Length: 238
Image 1 (cartoon, helix red, strand yellow):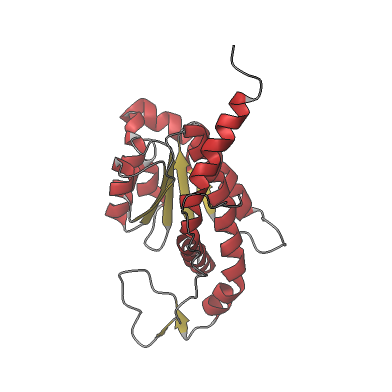
Image 2 (tube, one colour):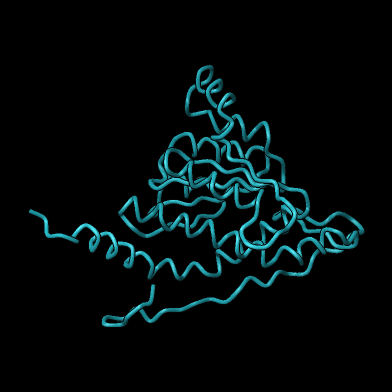
């Protein structure tokens, strides 16, 4: 018989092991949050998709953005593609499940938008197809996955990969990522709104020049890098 508490101990041990490399994502989380703040303040939108538990986490994130995380603020445009159930089932019926997100991306995505795709395995064909569709229409793609390399990470512009073989741990840190992404976004949002309201300042889409006669926005400070010792016998606070 399995000793009482061993399931809890095993789970928490796996989670603690994944937290060590996850802490090194500080700069990336801050960069994503600041980037997204400027895109949404300028009228862009976030499209999000996942399957199963990852779909639920995607919808959690859009709820925080359309609603709020902490303080009251203006609503931000964020759409969970799986939640459009009539469109999703119609597309699956007529075109196949692989296209359920790709077709929606082609319908809704515009240059300057971000498509965030969540997958613990990084192998879901419908998410890889969505990333390819986003590239075709000029939408920036980010992925939250489990350990990389994986097909979804390879198909996206940027990826935050949780270094754990445990699907539950990966999902739990994807939820942490969603909350931190909102935290960094809300921290940067006042500056982003001010920049969007100033006709002399334009937030350029990555890879595209600023419009003629308009000033590019100042670089965004994106946070502090945390470096851990990580040596044997060193305690890391979770």
